[in-house]
Amino acid sequence: MTNAVLLAIVASVLPTMLYVGIIYWADQYEKEPVWLLTATFIWGALPSILLVWLIQNELIAPITAQLGTTAGGAVNVLSTPLLEESVKAAGLLLLLLRHREEIDAPLDGMIYGAMVGMGFGMVENSIYYATALEEGGMAVFGASILLRGVAFGLVHALFTSLMGWGFAIMMLKRNRLLRVVAPLAGWSLAIMLHFLHNVTTQPGGAFIFVALAIYVLALLMTLLLMGIALWNERRWIRQHLREEVSVGLLTVRQYRIAASRRQRNAYLWHVLVHQGFGRCQRTRRFYHAVSRLAYRKHYRHMHVDFPAEIEQLRAEIRQLNAHKIGVTE
Image 1: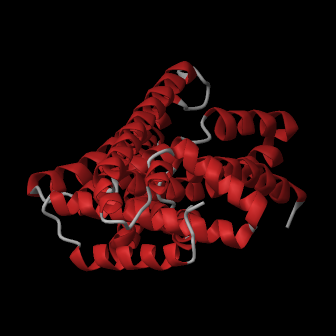
Image 2: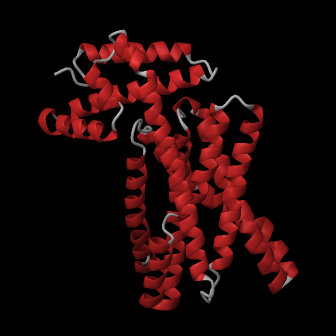
Image 3: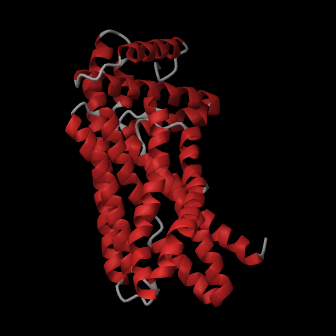
């Protein structure tokens, strides 16, 4: 491994880990399993990149070579967003369908989609960084990091999170029209934004401020969707866990901690500091089950039945409560 490749990998991996941490933190009420998040990240980082590379080289490149520079370049600009987003979407959809029990809210789909995008972007950036360093030296290498890793560091995560949102809606809603429109809308929007990004970041930088404006608008739209999803999750917890307090499954304090991100995070930190990592993990598991119970009850009210899982979650909460997990003091 050459020094250029090693430096490029380091420059790509470090900010990616920071962004991944922020994305994981954003899932406040019911954390997704780390192993499945890792699987979606790996899909974006390895199989997706390889499939895109094979299709581009074996199918698209021969066609563009026959078309000439101008027409071939136009085909590349048009086909790249369609190809990359479709490949990322295919793996994401298969993973979510295989583990659909983990999809409790639209935010879950966005989190998994963002992980696919972060994996894809990390490997793509490392390739660009290595090329920039070998062909242009440190100045071009630094500029590439500033542009791709900092200014547009979340661009692939944004694209794929929109598809994840559409897939989650498809899995959670009973309305047939919405189940068709939502994933198509997420996929189409991802391709459109990707296309606009590619066009406005062509060499020369004439439209870089347009690209930044599009990126910021897409980021704000994604944050709005995430904010709405978090607001809904809190509302479901408050609405559907009141019954569990009245029947004695939860205490009033447990209910209040479950319904507040601030109180939940503060309590988990308190347990970690004073009772250790193992106790903290069991407490996190308790509130994970409590949140999932609220989500499943919400969808039961929306005529999506989860009777068996609801009773299993209640049994898990009772078992953890028997060991005084979740707060009784």
